[in-house]
Length: 353
Image (cartoon, rainbow, N blue to C red; front, side, top):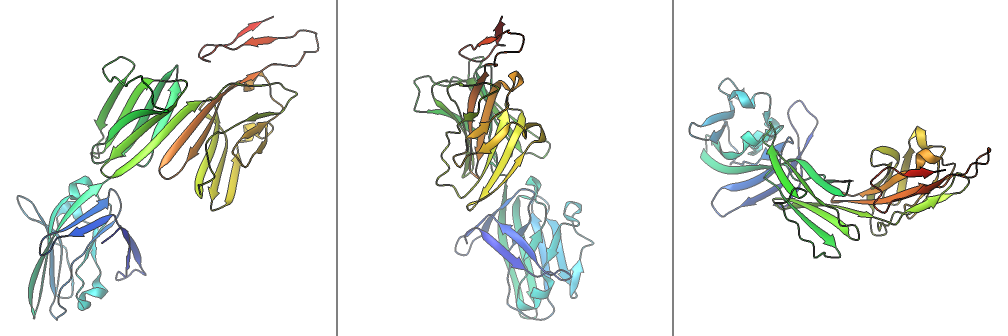
C-alpha cells in the first residue's frame, strides 16, 4: 500500500488522521510498515467478525511485551507495558466489523520491532505479524560560509545519514576529509537520532552543493557567491537573487544581512505571496521584485556587508551571497571617503581619508 492518510473514528473522538509512511506485505508473511519518528502510526489487523471478541497486541522480543489488550467488550490495560501507557488505542467502534488495528502515538526508536496481533471470537482465532521500522527523514540541510570555509549540517535523522559535497559545474578540487579544513562528523542525540556536520574549503567560482541522504530521502543545500554590488546613500540599489523560481509553486524566500539579521521573509503558495519586513529594515526596503531581487534605498555605511538570498522548498535550500559596497556621498564638511574592498571580503574594510 502506498503512502497515504488513513482516517478512522475512535470512541469518544470525532476522528483522527494518521500518517502511514510506507506499508508492504509478502504473500502469507509479515506485513512491513515504516512510520515517522514522533508521529502517530496505525498497525493494521483484521479478523472475521464474531461475538466475544478478544484482541491482544504483543511486541515480540526476548520476553514478549503486552502493548494493548481488549476483552469483555472493553480495553484491558493492567498488564500493559509501562512504555506504552497513554500511547495506544483501538478503533473500538470498528471492532464488531472485524477491525483490530492499533493506533500507536508519538513513535520512538524503541518502538521498532516485530508485533503480533492475536484475535479470537466464537468463530475462531487468528494471528497476524507486523514488522515496524521508524524513520526520521532528512528535513532541512543548513549551509553557511565563514572565512572561506563552508559548513553544512543537518539534525534529527534516522537511520544514519550520509553527506556528500559537489559543485556545479564540477570541480577538479576533490573533497579530502583528512585535511584540517575538510572534515565530517556524526553524533547521536539522547533520542537516538543522528546529527551530521561537514566543513570544506569554499570554491569561489562554483555553486557549492551539499547533499544529505538517509534511507530513500535526500535533501540538498547550495551556496554560491555573486559579484559585488555598489551603491551610495543617494542611490537605489538592486541586489539580484539568481535562483530560478519559475517552476516552483510553493517556496519561501528570505533575505538576510551578514547571514544573521533577517531583512524580509516572503512565502509563495500557488501564485500568492505574503511578505514580512523586519522593522529595522522597513525604511531601506523599497521593493522585492518578481524575480526575488532586493531593491534598497536610503542606505548608510552601516548597511555595507554581505546580503544573502535564501530560497527554500520542501526538498532543497539555495543560498546566494552578494557583497554590497557603500560609497558615501560627499559630506557637508567637504571630506570625502573612499572604501577599498578586498577580493575575498574577509577582512575589515580599510578607510582612507
